[in-house]
Length: 114
Length: 121
Image (cartoon, rainbow over all chains, first blue to last red; front, side, top):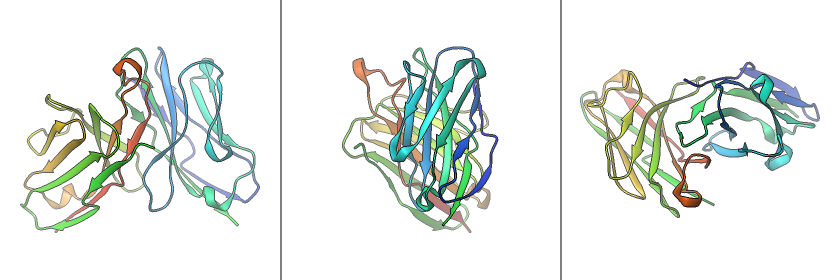
């Protein structure tokens, strides 16, 4: 069974600092990878996704993630965070090849101080 | 974009009653919807996968008779918490996937409802 691990549970940064949130998964086959964001009081929404092709994926609001197959990782990055990036971030994986049962990581709470 | 509406957003009821939560895809058809439970400071826990026109697939440890799921149409799935007790109090979230090319759902992202906060007294 696939599993997803997000190592950073709580991250506190100042505005303009760089961000990297870790996401590792355990599954040996083809995977589809996602990052979702949940802003305070709002529903989860898609930030970016990787299906195939260029392992460096650009998402909304200046976020990007890099798929490193050899490390089973899909870390989320942003060079300069803003106060409005304060949110909960979830990494999700579902095995490719017809399976569509998603597995979510525990989530990372990001607080950005102005 | 794809919108998923979940209703009600908050419900408080007495122990022993049953509560129905609706999940609707407003501008797309969803053959598959997911029901999650989210505890404070924890991740989304998949409860069941709801398939239109067939029985839901429940995750291990989730009681089928306790959490009744009906997916009668391509735009509506309902979760009924039967004989609710205080330990059922939680945040329940539904999501749906848009059908992809060739009706494949595998690699489509999910669209989430706003969630339902259930409080059982």
